[in-house]
Length: 243
Image 1 (tube, rainbow, N blue to C red):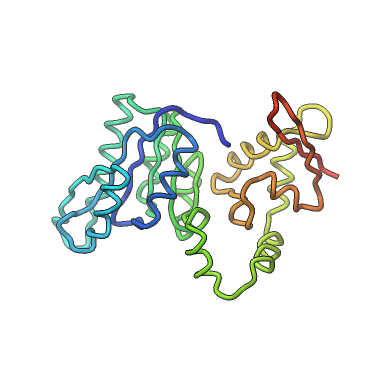
Image 2 (tube, rainbow, N blue to C red):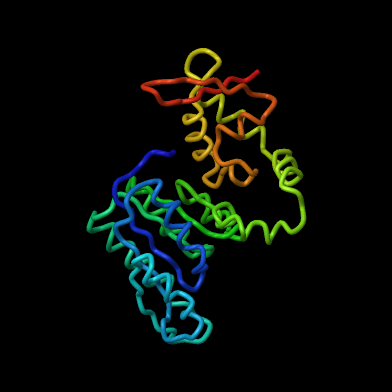
């Protein structure tokens, strides 16, 4: 798990997110802290926003109304950005999560980071790289969607074949660089340190993209590395060493 912050505001662009993924998204954000502010922005007078109704009730999100005054113009992003800056100024949270695949939030993410405040983004793989790189952590929706949804997208491909193909696509140069950054003395280091450095180099790095639950499982399947058990206080804090 990454470094944990205390209070997080999750701000959702309702025009640019999927209601059925909000539960796994909320679970993902909760790994990093307690979600104290939950807001979804959109024009709630429009019929397609009805898909959010159950989500609002079940997950305790507050709907923020923004009318579309001009055809072709989206006022949702402006409202979300203004609210985020107000929250930032009031210093009532320790971190933000912006849920959108829209590059319009790139400047907001940069501004939050300038204050030394944790900011993560969640969006689809179509999200522009500028927004991804502006966040401390960026998680793709495709990596956290329910298994049944993944199976539909994968079709008839066998899971083992999929995982093998995904493993072949791992960027070993990136892994090696993060590993070298994590070394202090000797040739082994904590996997958690490698994970932190991977996120520093590439905010969107996620072992789930390669079919593995966590970074330890990914390293266990990389022939270039050995994973070493490291029991402290009854808990395993695994180490990794390059062969």
